[in-house]
Amino acid sequence: MDIVIKAAAAAMIAVLCILLIKKSNQELALAAAIAVTAVICFAAVGMISEVIELLRYAIECTGLSAAVFMPVLKCAGIAIVVHISTGFCKDAGQNSIASALEIAGSAAALFTALPLIRSLLDTIGGLI
Image (tube, rainbow, N blue to C red):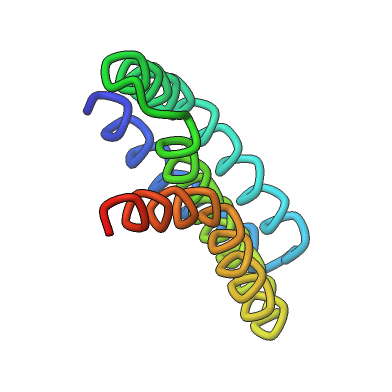
């Protein structure tokens, strides 16, 4: 929770600074926004590593294949990357690129979930 509060405070300060810069240099403002986002994401990596450890523990405890758990984590990662990237595209005024990226992200998430869907279908087929 402490990281979120610090990240939110840094984001608000950065937004104010970027708004001032944007009036005179839009390219520099976008570069600053990307840099601040990278710093905030880097700070969140510690929390993500704990989620990965929990998934590893769940795999060990249940004896299930990683094919059941890892697609969920990968889909979440895809969603985060696409969300941030489309925000940058929209900030730069490139809404059509943002829309294309959202479609690509959805397709990638579905593709990533295929092993989970196959595993589910195999389980259902075994019960029938």
